[in-house]
Image (cartoon, rainbow, N blue to C red; front, side, top):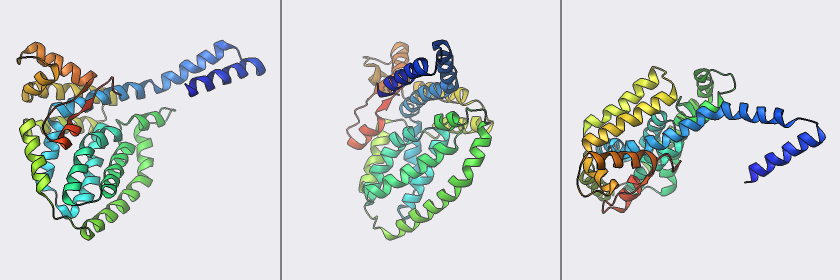
Length: 290
């Protein structure tokens, strides 16, 4: 509302004191909207990607296998690296923080790390990935003024890579200093993940395919669309019971799975797993939520 009122005042001043015709102002508005249209579409697709990756079991699988190999000593540094990778793959720091970041927060607390340190590692990695990802809406928006996208990313790496190296050193040292001997809750969380989702290495095909598309420099909108669509197909194949639960259907059939997939891509979903941390993790917001 404030931005719209400010725009109206500026337009009135331009027409009243600078003798600028409304047609010229309208043309400028349309030109500016056209320049950010790609970023708006990407933002909508990120909502669909977040929901489909979660309900299909892609993110839970990444978390489950990640907990099997994560060393408590290097947990903070691992958090930073994992969030950076996921953020590069999705192009969204907020999506990374709202999905895998929530799970890592719970794991960090179970290991005895303070919330501030775990959150710092998650946010550092998420924003690093967001800055250099060709799928990032802010990166695309920043390069929309006649600057090649990958040239913009290359120059940003001059500052983001050294910063990331320093950050990883700090979190590695912190991992050796802090006491992190409590892992009972981690095992409980892993068990809840496996009970709720069908965990399978085959689900890793989705992030791998997304990574290949990014490496091939496929257009961000196409990459996000294919990734979300592929995750939706995997949700039908691996998580039909969850789609039934989301759709509120009495049985698993084509109609319930289609409705579940559509609700996952477009609206907000919430699954009851019996684990409070896991309930927060699997809550998704699709296109409408973005």
